[in-house]
Length: 201
Image (tube, rainbow, N blue to C red):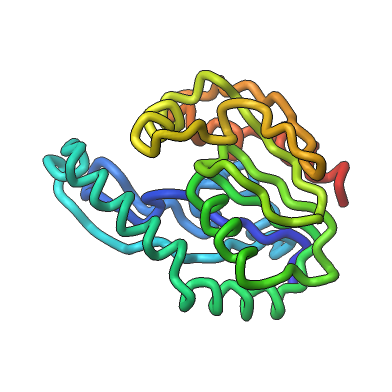
């Protein structure tokens, strides 16, 4: 069992030879590498595994199709059943989700309630808009996330990862993105996130 469950976001399992290698056990949550190794944290794997060429990874139409495929998977009952079994086994105190992983968790909460062991949810750069739970939610947002700006335009709704959610059960936390190369994953690569999580345990 692990205290922390990590739910990764979009395209974590999309790889390209020589240019985009697999993310490894922490699935892009590189700030958590050490505690994933120590098994204090564990990743719920859910994305679509695809190895593609460089032309595909640079093709916006391919990336949109992959995004829609993973959105469909994030809403699938089978994915939610797997997550339920995973959480029951791990009995986590904190769930941390990133980007499209927040969309997955929100859809999960429409069908299932969280375990009593879960004390808090941390959502980083959420690619969604609603948090349907009474459990305390910590919304890490930053208005200059280029990925979520594009997602907001595409989905025709502002993403919660760009601005405060302003909901009763949500604590909005401005978490500046500054780590290169991909600003969208800056927070989950930032050791400051570990400090924030430790204060919740």
